[in-house]
Length: 91
Length: 468
Image 1 (cartoon, chains in turn brown, green):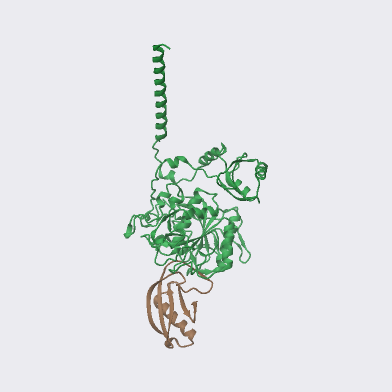
Image 2: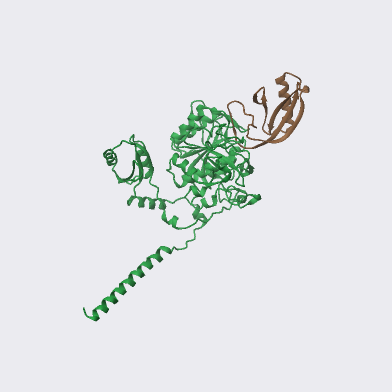
């Protein structure tokens, strides 16, 4: 089932709260923008992950928590944490 | 001699001169005159008939050497004569200015492919290839007339025929319509699309899908067990290779959407066999391990007799895997070309390699993307040492899930254009080796100013040149 922009933001907030071990309410939405990613891993491949080299329309999600900004990337198929403590995660 | 005799001799000489001149003119007229024969579209599409092939074979048996063989240095002429005599063959000619090459004729009327195989297995032989025939009639026939398919969305396929639609640059295309005057592909050529699978029920693909031959045993994988690979191979779980993303179906359509069927679009090949391989999931990503499994599958099927000569790989990452590099080289050893996307990060692959396109295996052809203005796509990777060639890869219309058609961009889309051209070459030259196939591709480009210093060939693939 296709993921909507709202669902993607909500999933990202929940994931960040889990990683930081805080309440979801403490994660604020800073910005969400439509964008083109370079590939089907949204430019955020996990280790040992190959992806289709097709330009992919999606959303760049900026979240704020504990005074820091965190980036998530999403499209209709997936949500990914981008360089969270230096690593990418598909959630 | 009296005066009358002189006149008689002069008159005879004049008659002889006139007869000779007239005969010469007659011959000239004969050469110039060619009957205007109307060839219907259906006939142009037809693959070579048995009659055509037997005629060609007859011509060859009347004297043309059948194969060209290069013997290793140090192999004496006596040894070469002995090796050929043992096979009831003979050395027809030593090729001047080409050290070690011999033209070999066969007295048993064996076909060239069999002879090539036989000679390639000899330890004394470095290389063998068919003695390709050059048809003078074609060369004399003058410029080819473009062939336009009756597929309703063909006008949106700028990559195949750029008429300047949507503000593009007229002629910034791969000259597909001219290539189709020579061949529109062959159902004997199999192209493996290593991707998210393929929607093999798509209305514009279903006629060009590979099916495991009934007599061929199902594939056996040590980990997955015996797999019913009737429609191809799914390396993720051994199930059906049906596409659940769309990316693989899009790439398949570029290579071989059925042409002239009055439905949707035309592929670079109107006729071909697409072998679906699924190793990427519904999101469009997959693991190195599954990619390796799928390539091993292709090699296995090739060994079992499937004429799969090309793997089209519209994917990648910056992570290098020695195991993946090794299996691509294994594909090379099995005469399989590996066409790979250069990547979409707008970087120089000479400095930041992208895999699998940057593996140093002789069968790898790395492909950059061009837009409809002949400019390198803003997203495309490049590399004057590591990226071989460029092809259209922006706003490319092709097949999508559920009998749909969508425009997509990426080196993913440029890659199957090159794979498709490679398949056209093989349709014309089925015995061509992977080395020669790659050489032919790289020699078949139109120079593009924007690619100077960006790719090895600095050119856009030209399908018509590839078939010359």
